[in-house]
Length: 430
Image (tube, rainbow, N blue to C red; front, top):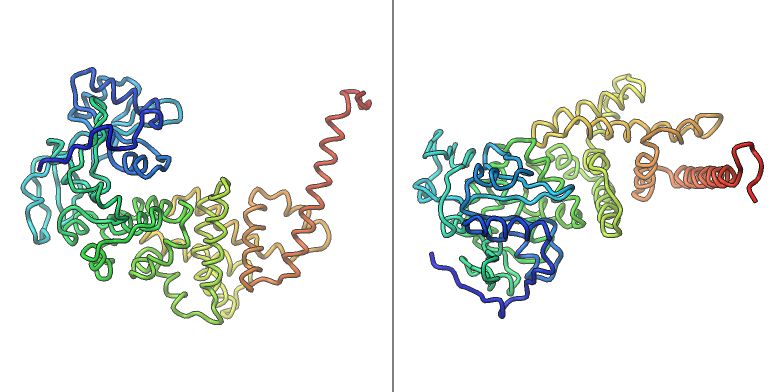
């Protein structure tokens, strides 16, 4: 497959907008006699005038050769062997050109496990792939046309293998190859399609959209831990609400969060969908304003309704409210891990956010003051406020806690200022 070559004079990518570390990797590979290209989302975003989140490099050097050139690199991955070149907190990912091989030409799913050189396919899904090839083969292996453009550091031209520039200009998202086969090879591509639609505002080609309606079941063959990373990309990109609505539109959300989908299908007076929508909208706003969002808080939003309903059922069976809350949260998270595996460091924080909701009901004595010192007070307080705006918690309770928190925070600020203005002997500083 011959690419269209777009010379420097006909595109807007400038080295001034490329990470200095990415340039260092590109030039060092070139100087070592290897082909060296910036590829994927970095090229796409630069062409769109966006600031890339990261920069990926493609080369004909093997991972081991990359490791020899860059002593500050490590090799990672079993499914895809990659080199990560570390520059402080910045990582440049370097991938060797992928080969195609005979398996990619098959149109029917593999009934069993099939091996081809260093590629393993199970039921049509690629589970291991370290077959190396040419840049032309590598382009064919990429998912979307807009991600199959290569910026050549040798002459600053762009190699476009699949009319990606045309699709970019038309705002269209299109897979390379036969859509059902590409989704079957890697079902996560369905989630990537949704994410790119939301992030870029592009429309999905009809031939690529149709399989989304009936291939959601294939997501169950993807490791649950990998799906957790994809969920974070979907919901913590500043377009979480849009992603949520699109996932539900295509029936994909039910394969990621089946307990939540079951609850959403049984809405009562527009709840819980109102709660999830408001929570995701608030999360999007935090991200857009440069504030951080803890994945534990996101999970608390997405799984709250299954926990709430299970807790109510346990209370009807005679369990005390606090015991019912702990048991319900444990059951819901355990079931969720079958689909999207939640790391323990986040699930523990999520359970604390839920558990603290009961402690907000205590407004007398020393209990409010003790709650203020809890390490999860802030996210738990924000969660309670969210419940109030959605009509689940009492507005008066939310208002009382907001006033109490701000008054105590102000008192603490005044005390800190006074201490700063006092010398070590307790005398005022002049």
